[in-house]
Length: 356
Ligand code: TTP
Ligand code: MG
Image (cartoon, rainbow, N blue to C red; front, side, top):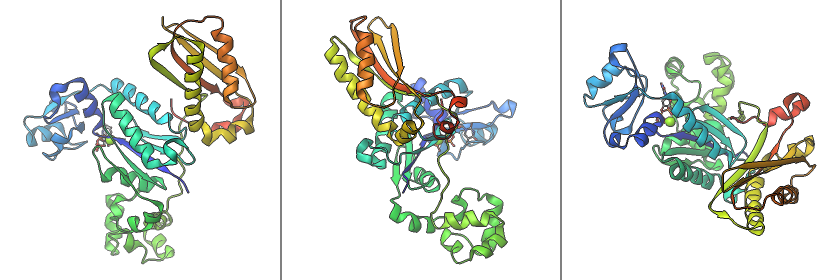
């Protein structure tokens, strides 16, 4: 049984703009091109949506529907940076992350021990952290597969979440309009409706063979979705070469003992998030452990060495060795592992794909 979280930021570009320009809060605003340049809306805030505005609508039409609309050009670089910061929060929970766009991702948290292993609580914590650290809101869906998690994230949007427990997957799916299914666009929706298929429950009245006759090979997938089944894995995008975690302290640490205590806390968190791939790491052997120390004057030092096991004692050895060379106030401590290059260890690349 898998545990998948789908996270989707609320009116992402608009939300970033409203954070940067509080005067745009509470009034209808949109990010998009100028009407005189035949521009369209990238997105708009929820106030503007009340006027019927939505992504991809022409700016000219948007201004007709909502003459007081604040229309801003937007800044993709800024959204990209923001996205990276949000994805870094995801990485504190799992290394299996499939980015869909700047503001949306699937997280496979199967086997993650944080939040007592509850995906619902992890989603809640992730959303709280996004709000606290980035002043933005996100919605989340939690389910046993990608398709249901994605639908669930829309259920209590904005700023909400919804869990479909595995025992409810089938009944939940049965109640859905077929237009909600991934891969069912306007054309296929119409075609299915002509056969009397409006809801997923209608799909189940047909045999697999009949469905294939109606919509080709997609019929197989359709049959699965209608039953609430989706075996597509969470596939990460880029090969990641290191996994790490760090903590910046409110007050600088003044003694070695204090540092060791904190380093241990960082390790425990790191270990819980990395545990899903721990087996793969030990199987493949080769990797380096490292420790990072940032002093109160912001200078940074790191030390790394190959070890065959992922355990705190190894990080402790590295820390002690480096700290003994300069015993001063510490602002940040971090630790992590570095994997070999792809060519050295091709097996790893499949399992360690994570963005950024
Ligand atoms: P979405 O998640 O589809 O939309 P959203 O985050 O703005 O709103 P919601 O609260 O409904 O999730 O897309 C994310 C961002 O991608 C969006 O803020 C702007 C950009 N985008 C476009 O530039 N063009 C488009 O057509 C769409 C759909 C999105
Ligand atoms: Mg969104």
